Image 1 (cartoon, one colour):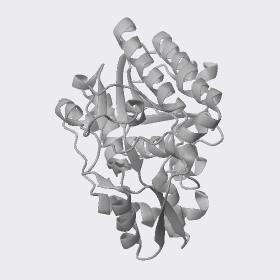
Image 2 (image 1 turned 90 degrees about the vertical axis):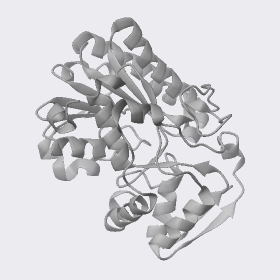
Image 3 (image 1 turned 90 degrees about the horizontal axis):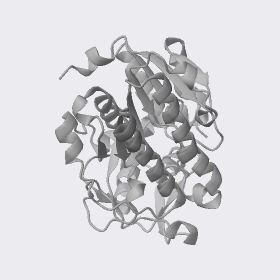
Image 4 (image 1 turned 180 degrees about the vertical axis):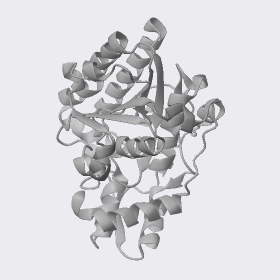
Length: 329
């Protein structure tokens, strides 16, 4: 297999949602690999988009504010070797409270995007950021790709639809799509101002600010993926022919319960505390319970494996936000 370095060196690569958490970390890695990086982001409110994420490297890439739903991306696509499609809304509770914007972003905009790709770059590779939320409450763990898709919230339904449109455009039109079902991804540049995207974000904020955080339930088993490992998964999904047309789980290290995760985070921080509380009713209705992924299919297809231990990932995350808290709250 061609190495990642040679595959991306000099290639035009476009990232939708590139000012967000995973997108900005992916962009930085692609710059290191010598790619011609193009960033497209609508900078919608209440998303993970943050211009500060790429402020120090923006001179090394092209950044455009554009909305996928308005077909504004079309003129930016020609010449792209790979498009990483990370644009979309992520908030599960937010989608329940206001479902139409979530549907517009995660369904309508995705179809518009795929139509533009079909017109302008039919031979490019397209990697879509899906989510483990589409499985709903797992009937078994670890969850492999054969598990039924039965989401329990609006965002999960819309993300499942977006994923299946990508698969459809591969089967019918031959677009070279790959979908990655991500689990809890964490690390530098994630949203920490609230819990809209990731429960771990608000935990980190509270600890860095010297306060306490809440753990709801606490017994749920979860696996987590450090962002550098997620970035590596995206790069391999775009570069490996064996991944084309596939839908894959991306996991992380061994699962642990949220209470144990909280204890680990406090220990690494060296200060702070947490309180275990019952779920707020609106969150309990859409909580999926235990989840950890069986990602052997992707490992076999690409050779990927997470390299960052949970301890090291949490340590790096805390250190980053201790230095950059003001930019993210």
